[in-house]
Amino acid sequence: MARSSTRLPRPAPALPSRRLALLAGCGLLGGAWLQGRALAQAAPGSSAGGSSPAMNYADAPRAAALAAQLAQQTGLDASWIASQLDQAQFQPAVARLIIPGRPEQKNWRVYRSRFVEPMRIGAGSDFVQEFDVWLRKAESRFGVPRSVIVGILGVETIYGRNMGGFRVLDALATLALDFPDAAPKDRSSYFASQFGDYFLWCRGSGFDATQVKGSYAGAIGMPQFMPGNILRYALNFEGGSKVDIINSAADAIGSVGNYLAGHGWTAGQPTHFQLLVSSSIAPDTLAKLLAPDIVPSFSAQDLQNAGLPLLPQVLAYPGKLAVVQLPNAGAKPDYILGTDNFYAVTRYNHSAFYALAVIELGNAAMAAAQG
Image (cartoon, rainbow, N blue to C red; front, side, top):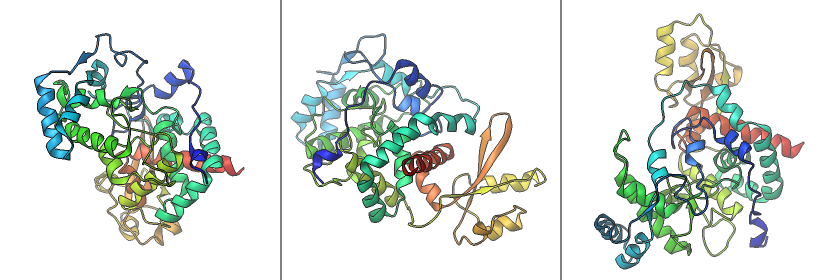
């Protein structure tokens, strides 16, 4: 297939009301409320939505020190890194968005409704029909079902429609050099390391480090990989001249498959089973079953001995299982049993809500594409 055939068309801008509806109520990168904050958009030519003007890092002593540090980390030319940092700007919105919001009452059914909904399902169906050859190739190579890859790309960026509007250069410079004191933990060293990986990727793939756009945290492309994960897991899946998870659907598909395979995905294994938990189960017993959270820790026999009613397919499952509670605010929670493959999906975002939304969106999109 010609390389141009996997290029994504430039999407029409989302209507403001649709965008706000999609992004409302979400939270931190890596938490159960990822999406709205991670993909917060900056208006072109603005300071990413902040009211204060952006401040340039050119000639800042701490930026020069960071350039020297990154040159040592990466082996790249220090003067080139310094010239890139000279063009970076502090972004107030980035510093604001990295601070956790107030804790919200978790509600799985509300969270699900934000992602498993008609617009994303329709976009996913279109994506499957256009790029199924690459989805099948990834499924064959990595053992990851097409539906799971489709679900991740749909939850992360709506198949490339919303990949973030911050310059990655600015986001990483802000978080490496001016990580906010109000945040509960200083993660500036992590973002400095990601900055080095970003420069390595740009140099290796021919991207202009001053032009790439991404999330407020520096996540890039259709799958929203941080730069370190681009170096570790991103693939040139369609055989072009560079790894391009921004414009190439094939590269994005293959990279997600490679990421999940690298985090323990086992071909042919289910992701989860349905579970009904009776109100008659002893609270201390349930608490012990829930204690490992999303980490598979119990055999089917363990769960049966604890008094859980199990489906026949669960009893036949040979691996460990996690008893996962899905709170619904004040209503009765839902439950599932998560397998090692469910846990692999949570390596993308450490949240049971996220993993189940990915799985259900992917299944719905595949069903729409086939019917």
